Length: 360
Figure 1 (tube, rainbow, N blue to C red):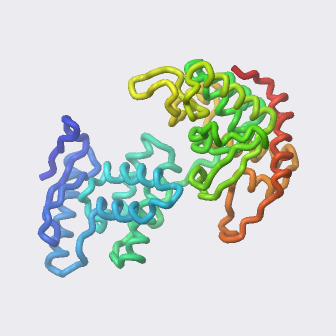
Figure 2 (spheres, rainbow, N blue to C red):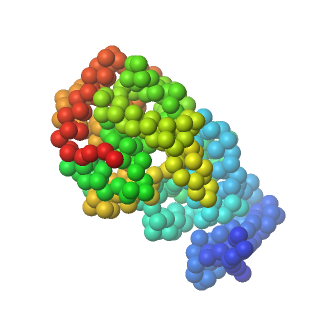
Figure 3 (cartoon, one colour):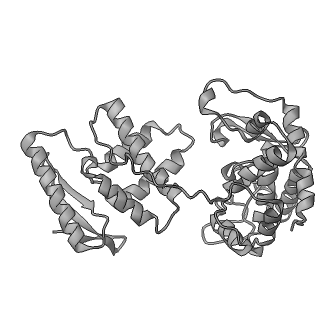
């Protein structure tokens, strides 16, 4: 009979099922539903499947926890490993570590999607179910696990109305909408638009990788999504942002290695600690500015769009500036001359002056 499991001192909101699998192992798994009637039906289904496996000698059971653990172990080299670990946690939280992968049906994926869409965008949900799909395919091809893939055909449509890039006016509105308590976000937004760097690349930026002499930000392989090093030119606007950050550093914490750091001590952070995330402050600024469908990554698209559509910079130069790689050019990666990249970011200067925003 389904039951409510205690987690962190309180009962889970989901009903849990308990049954013995085909190998005689006791399985305790979340049903992913708050309705007892649905939980009873799921438990009965899983018990029947376990009986058939025992009677007819089906393949050994594989738990979701085992699948995620083994897959994440062999893919630690991926730039998306942290994101994959987060997705795995969400899947395990819903289905349970002991849930048999073979017991997960397309209808279960639909239930998971319905649950997650109350909290995240469809694109995020697709990343999470996509991880499960990729892990199953890998286990089948590399380890011969013989698992069925319940994620096939379950990809959710992603909204096409999401902003691709900001206009000059929208960029100015976003800057002015930043909460004073998150003043660092002004510099972060400005630097993102002027360089096209990813959020992670900027938040993990250290002062010893700012080349003042050559006007470049040095990104080593470990700092980039593609695991390829690149040098990002900084135009006068980006340089001004970095000078402001240097002044903030000299006032609050001269010893910090980070460009973006906390200037106040909080419960879990000290002055000088790296700022690890800006999602909440970014959402607040977007809401105040009346911008929907905008994320920090939109700033990267904005940089590319301003360069390509408004400044006439060639696509190849933009690709090298942003560190993009092409699926059709896996091993061949064409690079523009470094001077071309410097010329490219300098063209963003006029858009900064037209946007009419002042920095704080």
